[in-house]
Image 1 (cartoon, rainbow over the protein chains, first blue to last red):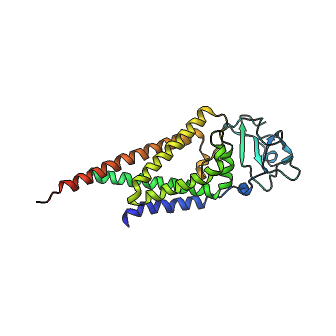
Image 2 (cartoon, rainbow over the protein chains, first blue to last red; image 1 turned 45 degrees about the horizontal axis):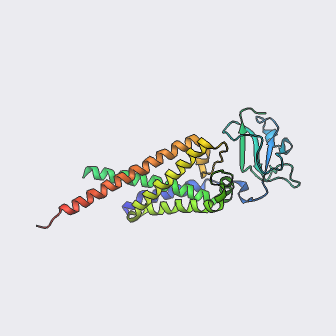
Image 3 (cartoon, rainbow over the protein chains, first blue to last red; image 1 turned 90 degrees about the horizontal axis):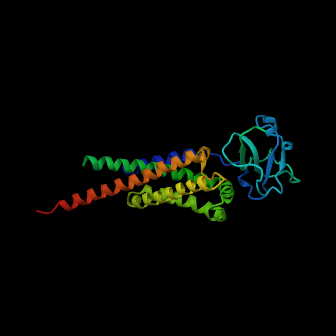
Length: 105
Length: 153
């Protein structure tokens, strides 16, 4: 039993950690997400939460405007759209991917 | 004898760390399987196998953890861990060097790391896996020598 002690401790710790890692709200969404370009001020929480501050990037199938590069400000998001498909459904889903830029707008 | 005891402890601690890593990342990948698949599907290198990998990777990680858990299969577990860590490190290094699109497909809190931090993290775990295999082999050799030297009078 003694030789299993560290292993048991590691498993318990891992299960504990993963219990506190909640899946993304959008995890259930497998299809239908689109890329939206953020055109507001990325330092303004109101703009970030406002669907009208986003425009569909082309057909929404790929991100064509921004580079993903671990920068500070939101540029594009991949998210399930609202009915109609031209605005992101920010109320019901989190973006499942985000690309950023170095300036807020 | 003293060295062998220290080596045993080092192997046990590294194996426990690897179990912690693989159980945690394996489970979080399975819990969040849909988004994990979505993220790797956008990887230019492995995107075409996203459905297969989104199941295979967490299963292999959990299997490695299971092998590491039992003393009889620890050696196999350490080799699989080393193989996995080399693959993960190689993938991240390749993506950093050759890809301009970097989707993060890691599990749980590891997603908070930047790609460079992730590379360093993986290199450390690759080194630890290799170290534990080396100590494990030394320890087994020590046991074998001791067993052979006990000749009947």
